[in-house]
Image (cartoon, rainbow, N blue to C red):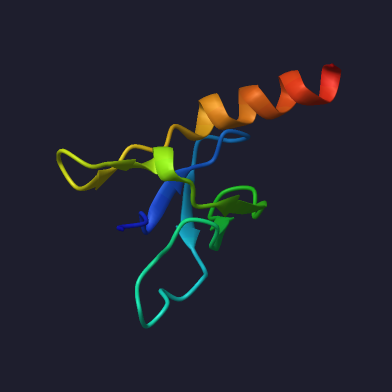
Length: 77
């Protein structure tokens, strides 16, 4: 499983770089991945899930904005 080196910060729109080293055996579902934004310096801790991998292309398809929206919906419930 491939975890992106850079994601976009939903707070400021700048690049957030991965600060977690890749495990020796590769990423697995349930692993935590931390990112630090280069603009606002926020830290984002994400969990690798099955749905983050597009099996047909072998690429990550994690939608961070959707994930954040889902979290906000859960908090308001």
